[in-house]
Length: 113
Image 1 (cartoon, rainbow, N blue to C red):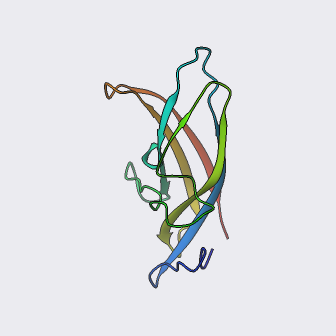
Image 2 (cartoon, one colour):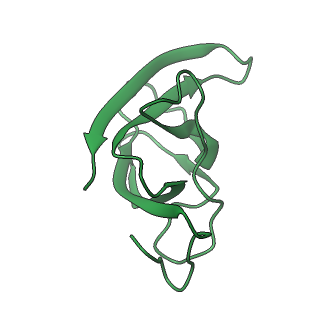
């Protein structure tokens, strides 16, 4: 996107808007704390380097922090800033527990342009 609710990236960059739904599918009744930093983006040529989405600044975005109870879901946008010439991307979600244990990681590759 060239802009998102009035926000425009610096010259030479583009906005990537990912409309996602996150659902708590765990079997127990525990709530899952979620943070915008649970999601990262990388693109061709970045290696293992990733960027976080922009902190919440608009109504349509996922909140910076929220909780999901068993069976509950949340839908919203993640807004990333990337170079305007980047084309091949990968959205990543990482399960991180309270004790900093990293659980499963999920990758969604996609292209733009």
